[in-house]
Image (cartoon, rainbow, N blue to C red; front, side, top):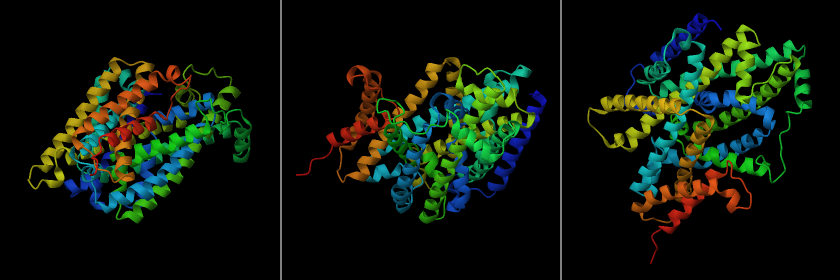
Length: 480
């Protein structure tokens, strides 16, 4: 693809984002940054959350993975749907009743100071790793598509990428994010729909024939009932429920958007609408994956060694220019929609949980907010450059495993707080939330030897949460 064309497209795209940021951040205050003054339209929040949830990793990995595991990923998504119901009808009522800005404030009121700080710290750690990795992916795409043609180093590409996010989020915060993410969701979904249309049209099918061909292909298997398989239905389904509860309901990034709705009822309508759209969009990605393999086979295109490379390879090199353009815009939108909301939520959590913004009355809040926002931008840059320095497939997998381990303590803390009425020796919580991931890591690495060949997968986060819950039970205050 012509680098000048890429430059024009991306420039126009970011100008549009900055224009939206300008329109949404006029007369913005610190409350606007954190809560959007609690006036967000629930349907806009629901649509924008699609872009936040579907990162660039999902954008290219889910279609490619169809060649390895067919549609069995959808078992996990069905679990996600149930998890979103738990968030809507159990967690959101608690957050709205307590009028929270940072959801980790709940832990202070229920369990104590150290539980509160531990929960927020693990969110900051998890989200920094996840956001940096997503930004690393989008920077790699931009580097290959544009910056490398002009000899611009990767580090400069990363700085420009983060600077663009900082520019359009620095004033409006979550209010801006809600609208820019909705815009980016449009680009993301458009890329998928246009690619699907291009494939079945080029193969001479109508829509009904496309559905039939996908159903008859060997890639369309959804359910796996072999209990020994890593894709066993109940294993995937339960993991989908718990991972959604933790990575959405106990995650400041996702919940901050929900808490900008006018009231609980609208926030619940948002979650229900979002969950239905999300399931439909993932099914589109799986359908796209089957079509990509059918298209490659019909045109005798050699498949890449890595399944993640399939969609980029076909969209850029074997389809028309419009598909290549929308693929580039789609993956950029997917990554930016995840990264921009992550940067905003990191800033929010640190300001509320560690700088005590909720209790401060001084005039330095805006200055501290700006400094914190810049600080997390620089931290993301540093972590991305570390990824680049040690980049290999094992490191990529380790990053996801570390992120999963760090969410386990959040599951245990919130579960203990909501499912029991016990009080704990709060000063011992840091020991528990360090011990639980450590034990989980050991069990994960030696599960085959310890558990007669059993391999731990997505359920690691459940095990981690259970260890945390048990640890909190052991440090409970015994009633006389």
